[in-house]
Length: 80
Image (cartoon, rainbow, N blue to C red; front, side, top):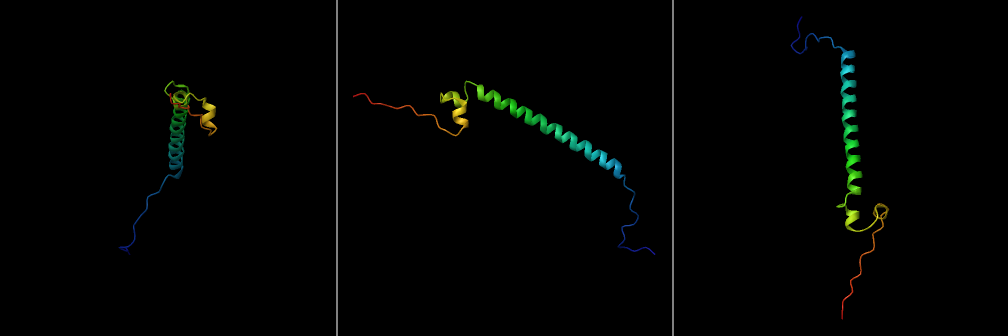
């Protein structure tokens, strides 16, 4: 007796192959993420030593800005 609500025969599924594909995809994603993080790290290091970096423009050492302290602002005196 066929029931119209029954989905019928469900084909077998290769869970071992699925697990291999999942682990391979996860490994690929981890590799891509590591490459992006490595690139970001290189860019941060280049920016920190660039003559156009914020630290250089303010004439403040990197450690001053990284510690949260602001470099002293130049004083402006008016000539009278």
